Length: 277
Image (cartoon, rainbow, N blue to C red; front, side, top):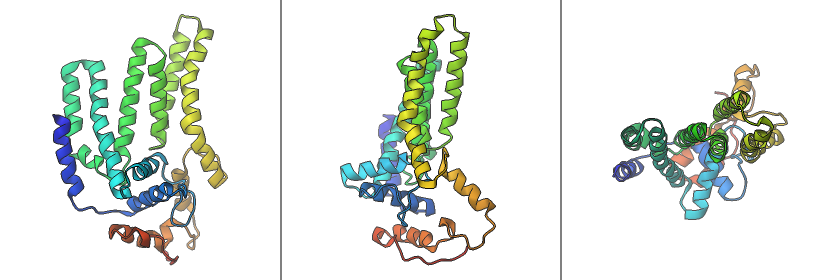
C-alpha cells in the first residue's frame, strides 16, 4: 500500500516541471553518449573521470531497453532504487528490532517527501547509493550473526558497487574489511582454513567493481586515483593560471545546459566559445 501511495507521489513529481542544472546536463550527456556506443565521454569527446560511472551507465541501459530519453530514463532508475530503498530499510530494521520497527522504517522511506523527490531526480545518485549502502549494512549484520559466507560477500559487493555511485562508498568497504580482519584474528577456529572464505568476497568485489574503474581513470589521466572528481576539484582550486581551459571555464558547458533544458539535446555539443568565469 505504501509503495502504491509512493507511486502516486512519484508520478506527480515526474509530471511537474523540470529544471536541469549544470551537473544534470553533464550526467545526461554521459548517459546519452554511452547509450549510443560512444563510451562515457562528454561534449568534447573526453573520457569522464569526474562523475562515478554507474549512474549514467544505468541511465543508458534504461534508454537502450525502453527507448526513453535520458531524462525519463534517469527518473526510472531513481524510481526503481527509491522503491528498493524502502525494502532495504524494512529488511535491515527487521533484523535489528523486529517487525513493527521494520514496518515503520519501510513506511518512512517509502513516503518521505524528500526521498520521493530524490527518486525522481535526474542527476542525483544518492537514492541508488543509499539503497546499496543499506542493503550492504543488512548483509553485514546478517553475516555477523550467521558467520562469513554469502551475506558477507554480498555486503562487500554492495559497498563496492556504491563506490561507483559515490566514491565515499569505499569507506564502508574498508570498514567491513577491518571488521572482517578483527573478527578473524579474535576467532578461535582454524584461521588458515578461514582465509579463502573471508578473502573471496572482498577480492571478487574489488576485481568486478573497483579495479576496472581505477584502471579506466589511469588510462584517462595517467595517474592512479580512486576518483577523478576530487583530483579535478583540487586542481582547479590550486591552479594559479587564469587562462586555464577546463570545464569550469568553457562556455559550451553552460550553453549545453540551456540546450538540454529546452529539450533540444542535439544542440548541446556546441562550437567552443572560451570565456573566463
